[in-house]
Image (cartoon, rainbow, N blue to C red; front, side):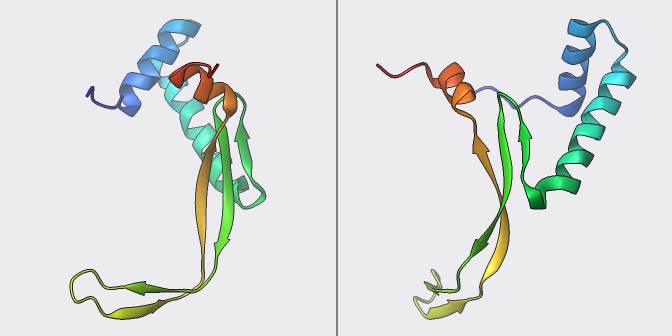
Length: 96
């Protein structure tokens, strides 16, 4: 399996494709991440890629894998990323 792209590699690709400097493309990536962090509680959508959403998980009973002992897991908020249909189709191909 191929290695994941680094931030630097992503910035280089964006800069090359759009005729901007690598520094400008890094700033764009950082601004996008900052916007996502700020607005994730209301849900943040990147068109064609997916959506960040805040989800409330209920309290539940779990099991310690080492001892087999049952434990109570508290309710908590988690951030999830829901992949857009367009991204799924582009990556996996369209189902027939």
